[in-house]
Amino acid sequence: MQKHNTSRSLKCLSRSLLAILCVALIISLFAIIILSSSISYPLYIFTTRTTNISPGLIRLPYSIHSQVSNLQAQLGVLLEQLHNGSSDSNTIAKFSDQVLRIALSLDKLADSLSSVSCNDPASDNEISKVDEDFSEPEESEDQEGSMGVKVFNSGELHNYTSPKPNRQSGKKIFLGVDAISPSVGLACTHMAANIDRFMNYKMYAMCPDDWDLAQKLIASGCDPLPRRRCLSRAPPKYTKPLPVNSSLWTQPSDSNILWSHYKCKRYSCLLSNETVDRRGFFKCADCFNLSKRGWQIPTNESISAEFTIDEVLGLKPGEIRVGLDFSPTTGTFAALMRERNVTIASATLNLGAPFSEVIALRGLLPLYLSIGSRLPFFDNTLDIVHSTLFLDGWIGMELLQFALFDWDRVLRPKGLLWVDRFL
Image (cartoon, rainbow, N blue to C red; front, side, top):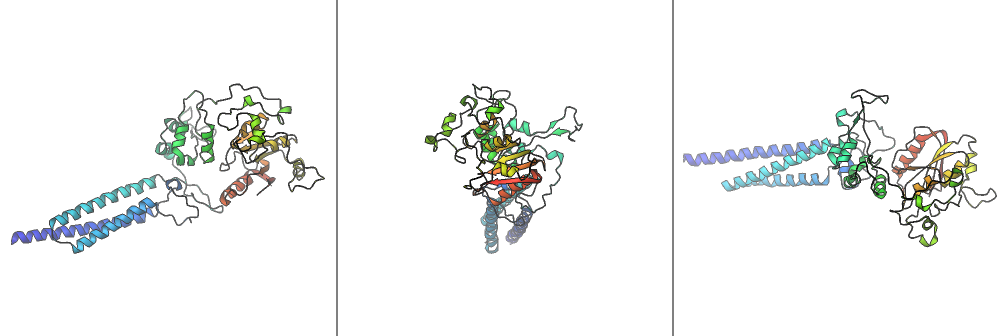
């Protein structure tokens, strides 16, 4: 009798302990959910693309939400078993194993949430509007140069992203810093495999012939690129450029362009009507025809609604000296402006053809950057910003805002913004 009562007491005690354990697990689960709601998740963690998310409504990743739901369902089943369970010792042992597995799952989930919180970037403005306050939180010096260790595998990339101390250690230079921290775009974390591949090169030797991979990284926001310790590859039979007086309107030599990653392998292919569907570019069909001088419509004709260059310069006589052309271009606008003593930098990418090479061979200045890059000019320094055949139906409203506000930043007071052929 005493043995039976003792066994019954032990079973009751086991049930009580399990009930307490379940309650503790439920409290822990809800605590994790509540704490996780305060975590600001960086956008690059998610695989789905979300566009219209209000700043106050940030949801957990689907995988974590699914784990929480499964654990809630399992706990519900176990509590029902506890309420209606028999006194069989095997049932209690099975019940204990299930509770233990749930506890281990909760530990893993907590570790996962903790790692997500630790990897959260310093800036919480992943999704922002133009009128928001872009205040930047202060970062400790210990956090600098740490991103490459967490994301990338390339040893050369780790070496590049680490701070480079001054020759006199600990002493600040004229820039006000005691070390230089090389920059690399946050979007590189989206494409770690490609950036590791890009950084897999032989140091102090010739760079790989992979500008197409580099441009893919740049266009995706991984800019500036971190490769720094190899020699640029050039055409093997490069000839000296033409004099400045004749280079503006003369077809460049084929030997001065590295054709390996272009569909066309000679300059005549870029001009021929027979290769229109095979020459690799389409945004500006006559870009490589240097005999065509746009923006020079005779004053007695009204066949076009476009302004001429002389009409625009006439708005600010003698004031337009330096500027930017952000277009798919081979430099024709810059060449025409140069003839009028105006210096224009041409920002473009190699959109399937050697745009940048031709701009340089004409004796002009190419800027190799994407629309997502901040312009490399100081505030209020340019007299004119010009764009044509670029801001059309493909561009989203938020990106358009970012571009226009950056153009406004670099334009001086009363400078000119010339958006030509806005579709």
